[in-house]
Image (cartoon, rainbow, N blue to C red; front, side):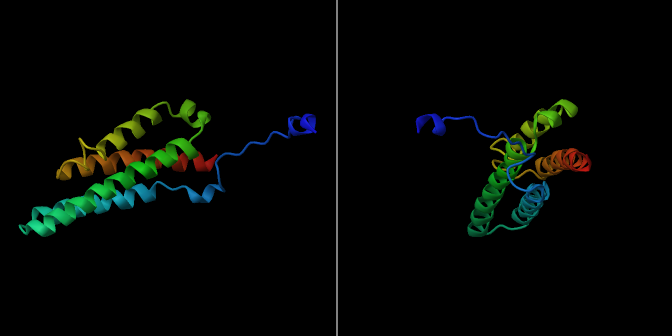
Length: 133
């Protein structure tokens, strides 16, 4: 009985955890666009209650950007992608830092939001290239 339990099994491999249609960098981009819009709204509003709520939402959206990028990095991208696109690790790292405490999560800097959007676009370009082949 134990022999059967520990017997070799059929080895399978899959490109990603679920059918490939579930991954999309657009999720990170949508949240980053929200961050940029919130930064603009906060800049135009002096109401302290509004500003507090907006900043909280901006911080939550920044965490969601990081989450969506990490899901792509850990679940979608595989070693062949990192070999073909050696800059991918750095891009994801830079993007998640731009969404972090020294970026959009911790600051009200529209420039940081623009940088974040640009990094997400670079990641998306690589993502869509990987979908072609």
